[in-house]
Image 1: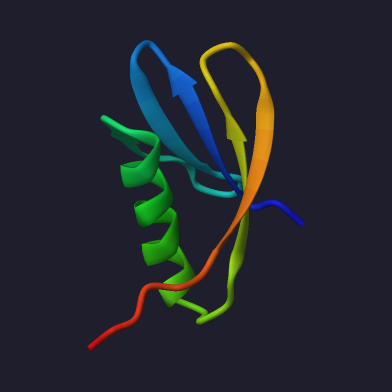
Image 2 (image 1 turned 180 degrees about the vertical axis):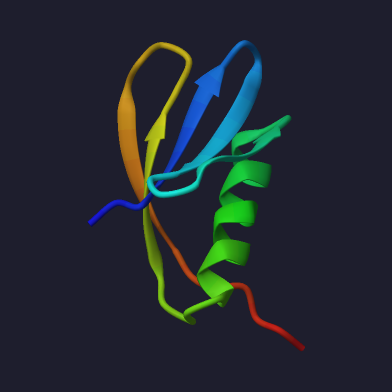
Length: 69
């Protein structure tokens, strides 16, 4: 169900794809989740994203695809 994860590590937020591995590292959680939205554009489906903060706590978010204008 979760094909994307955002993990805080060494002061960066890393976006991971289950199939491709690391997609990118970002300065903030918001930037990483925005990048997850860009991934959702490909199939125009919301993405369930697991999020692990720097303390090891897990959360999840549903990211809507970014709109192409």
